[in-house]
Image (cartoon, rainbow, N blue to C red; front, top):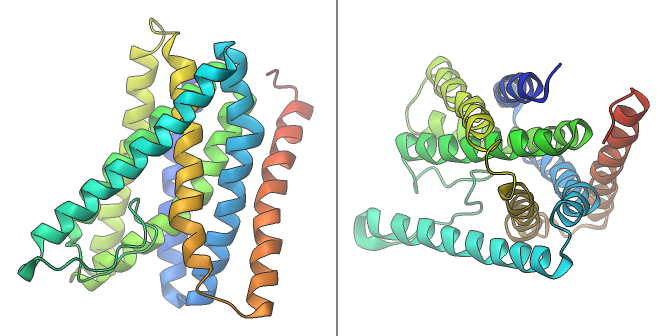
Length: 266
């Protein structure tokens, strides 16, 4: 299959997997289950960022200092974007009071802080960017594209799970919440489609987008997901989180070796 076909397929299938898993988990949703998903997602995101995407960005750019600056700039960019989201929420709520917002990308929401419509808009934008990142990674190499897609799907599951709960709390039935999430997931394929039409003539943008993809995953894992894990301070919970974070990293390494063994050249 061509990189274009693979990116479109993984974007569509990835969206369906994350939404389907979220819908299934809401049947018997528990904080422990969500915590386990988040712990694994932290490892998968950091593993993909540092062991896969960053090395490819360095190789594509040939300039370590420039790539490092782009990653740092990306982290600052996502910090500012999250601040803007929080500021908008605080001014949109009655009385001007900001509700707790644990994750700018939707991994944990306060149902009273956002309406279902705002959740869908934010989730659609996030999925669109994820599609761009998946397509960009596939343009660099098939193994990188598969690993990036796997990491994105890993953190999309708890994200969609959080969004699903918000939609239910905003008054949607389970059927409507599932339909809205499925529509939102199509934005990932739209992002992949746009990337393949726009990026072939802009090869210089590939290392930049890879660096931004790296900074996005680092920021989401470190700034948004890990603080939530610290709420569980028991020794057993801590050991479980460490094991699952390690499992996320190992799964990225394993996926890399698997796709290489299957004959995909980097």
